[in-house]
Length: 225
Image 1 (cartoon, rainbow, N blue to C red):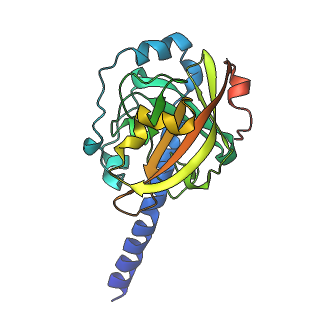
Image 2 (spheres, rainbow, N blue to C red):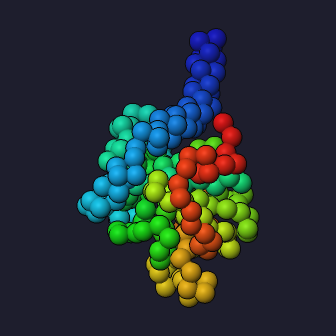
């Protein structure tokens, strides 16, 4: 009985630890992507490849098997930019194309040929309960908050104008047809799962505000840690 009791305790510890281990691994993933090592020319070259997958149906939810056992190194040849949201202390890489491995390291573009500051720049990221991990904390963004995108040539600044919970079939929210609702201005659409509720997504929409030359100090203004 003592051995059985000890076994149950150990199993309980493992089940409690697994989510924390996953969060730690995912946090480490995003920290491992050192944008400073990529030049504006690197990002431009990566963006011009356009040979990536954009089929959202092939994306799998995060699980312990994918995070720990089947994790591959990030493909830096797919990094096309950087996303910063000072209000939630978010600073992650943007990968071109929707791929399971890339989504464990940062956010991903949702359709081919996207350009910052033009049309609807749609980006997806995994929801995590830990606000520090991937798109965790996205639901805490408020109207008026600032979203910054960069290709290391310029910084594209957007101001949040709308947040919403929608059904998962709202593909119109990643298209350019949405621009008419915002005086024709370019927008950024950030998408993640709505907590753990199946069948729903959460969107943050930002309207293009201003453009200015890139500097690391300006891009990371308001970011701590």
